[in-house]
Amino acid sequence: MIKIDPDQEERWWRVMAARDKSARGDFMMGVRTTGIYCTPGCPARTPLQRNVEFFASAKAAELAGFRACKRCKPSGELPRDPATARVHRACDRIAAQLDPPPSLRELAREAGVSQDALRRDFARALGISPREYADALRIRAFKSSIRKGTEVTEAIYEAGYGSSRGLYERAGKQLGMTPSAYRRGGEGMEIRYVLTNSPLGRLLVAGTQRGVCAVMLARPDRELVSSLKKEYPKAGIREGREGLGAWVREVTALLRGRTPARELPLDLRATAFQWRVWRELTRIPTGETRSYAEVARRIGSPKGARAVARACATNPVPLIIPCHRVVRGTGALGGYRWGMKVKEELLAVEERAGRKRRRPAPRKTASRRAG
Image (cartoon, rainbow, N blue to C red; front, top):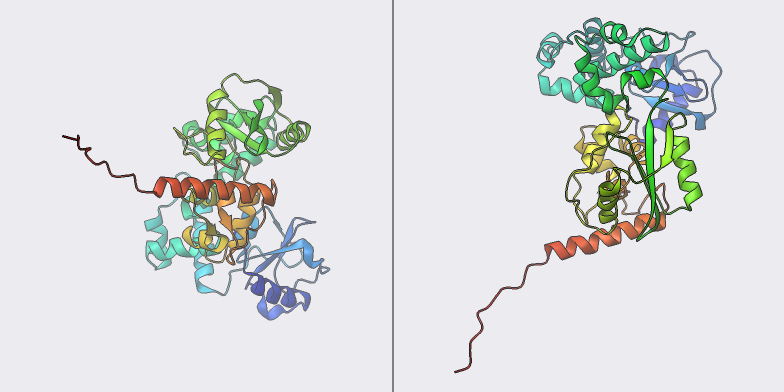
């Protein structure tokens, strides 16, 4: 979810290290090694700074997968910041009514603010909209029921879906597979992959029947296949071109700076925030770049530059979702999973292609026949 700017993080770290109870409720600290989040003043042992991340609210920490500390009990505490407090109340209202969830108009009226103001409050505190928060709660409830052994149909209704259609429509984006496949931990997924040459070295494109699930490049074949198996450890993975030929051609075209002839279908697992970032990346024109901070502002999360960087780093289908077009505010390239040389070359190829497309076509003049 949304992370805070580095200076704020440093200030909040000092508050946590000093166990300052006067800041209780102002922010939350998640500890990656334990999966627990705390509020300032918690008597628990202070973790190493490199193992923590900060959140604007308890709800944001929980959406990121952290559990409330049993010593400082931060989850039931209402933040002192009025906007974040409104978000907490709206979240509790949504949690109490998931089938169907309350509308944005209802939530805004109860909060005493406009719909636009409440939407901005959600984006700042959680990085997602009220509707996306409701979706996240229902998906979480569905997953919890499935893990307990509940039948799929029963779990769908327990999670607040009025019918199976509501879950299946979202399963591709929020589960990355069908609900039944999720119950088996991804077992039963059939993934095919193709290895081929490309302008930047070896390229792997993998997909299911539903769409492309992985793009990997610029590594030896053995390393590419190994990375794919780590991404999908319980899936059935085999090499085979059946049904992948057109997708491979489109991905190869992207490597040459060309626009695909059609939109490629995707079969991915992602959080709501990741999808918001990835959608914004696909809007960056070929030959142009945006800074992490600019992408964060465009998705309504001005404090979320680091969270945007993390979403870029976890993008499983580079080129299709062009994370290489995001750079630092200083103009420096920033990081890239497949190496800085590859990122630099991709940007150079796209810049040349962009200039070529923008170049005006020569004017045709009528030739005169000598008389």
